[in-house]
Length: 212
Image 1 (tube, rainbow, N blue to C red):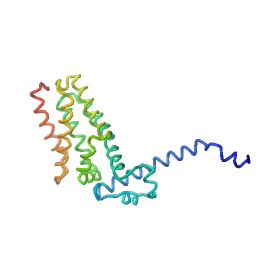
Image 2: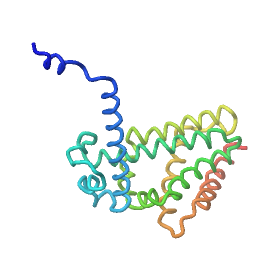
Image 3: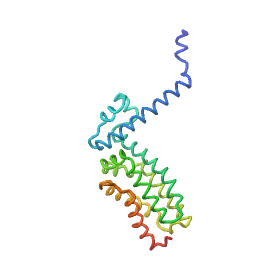
């Protein structure tokens, strides 16, 4: 065996592995940022993989190293947004001392998350139907599980009355999504008014269940 063959067979140094891993993360982040912008501008139906790749300095073939198709990257975009929403909810409703504070934190965080970022607002406006189809996907179900856990904990603390947690979680999720659809269709978008309305609506229902 020659010296060159021996050198070629040696494993790459850790630094090379680190650079490659970092590059992969950068490529994926670049594709996700491009996809978010394209979906916000064009909507899911009109957008194509080519439109997304054109917003990057990557080749089309590189796209398929990370995502199977347009559906997969759209799901990944929504998954990233879901992760951020989960984080914000843990800093809000999870610490609420009263039922009203819990409900207001739940709705306010969600509505402001959508309304305060112009690109995200455009994404929501252009993709209501596509987002609906993702509501039962694993990444989005994480949001539902987080709500369920926060409700269960609030009930144990006495912040909320002992109600059917699964049904109430479904009601809160449905109200939040449907009101957000109406909210973003209006001009100007008023996240505070939407949060106040949704809070009063759900609090009125809880009053008959013993909430304080």
